[in-house]
Amino acid sequence: MPKTEYVIEPGKQEIVSTTILDAPRELVFRAYTEPELFAKWWGPRRYKIEIEKFDSRPGGEWKVTHVGADGSRYGFRGVNHDVVAPERICAFEFLGMPGHVALQTATFEALGNKTKLVAHQVFQSVMDRDGMVASGMEDGANESMERLAEVLETLKAGK
Amino acid sequence: MPKTEYVIEPGKQEIVSTTILDAPRELVFRAYTEPELFAKWWGPRRYKIEIEKFDSRPGGEWKVTHVGADGSRYGFRGVNHDVVAPERICAFEFLGMPGHVALQTATFEALGNKTKLVAHQVFQSVMDRDGMVASGMEDGANESMERLAEVLETLKAGK
Image 1 (tube, rainbow over the protein chains, first blue to last red):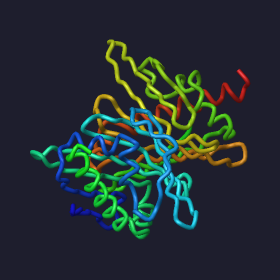
Image 2: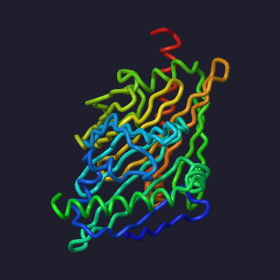
Image 3: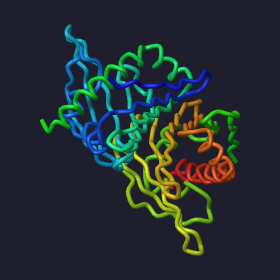
């Protein structure tokens, strides 16, 4: 199971998380940029994921909804500013807080057959950052990394 | 001439600037979102501006180059995450520093026949923010605001 380290300094408006994944970088990059793989790991297991748009090209839009068992819906949309293998950058908006946006950068570094994933999020304010932390972001992100590791195992097995 | 106030706190990764413009908000919004108006004020006067793309819709891309008298070229490109009158948000990249991106939000508030413009920039690091400040950002931004005020005068006169 991958372990993620978080750097969340008081008074700052960013979150940096680092995870070592036991898979080659090209597979990690695919799991981030192919919608059918992305749908298998992004977010907590308790939500079904609906992908309305998922254009991983620079300037491409994505729109994804988490649907709870009770029918509750949590929408996310963003624009990919830049998509460069092995680096991906996107702007991200939680539709529940319209107008509140974070700039996210995921960097993939090859470590032999493993990959060091650094996810960097910058928020528009310290308050937005603290709100994201208070919302249980770490638990959600840890669950995503667990699911990502499972997807990567199936990709490594060639399934 | 508009006066701009800057808030640039040490150790933070943002810049907030506030300008009161002597024109109604709808004209300020037009000067930000119509390419033929934008070209008349964005950046220092010493550069010619070339607009390759300027799609002001949510998810739209823009690509703009400043050309110096000696032929030197400085490219900028971004993706508009969200464009909501009276609010506009874009991701912005200075092509001279590939991969370095800032998330920018311009907010237009009506004050009678004047407009309060708040421009908010969040950088990926304190180093990026300090680099932008050291590059002479304030002088360039002040010159842009001066030119914007001139464009707004012509719009108010109905020219």
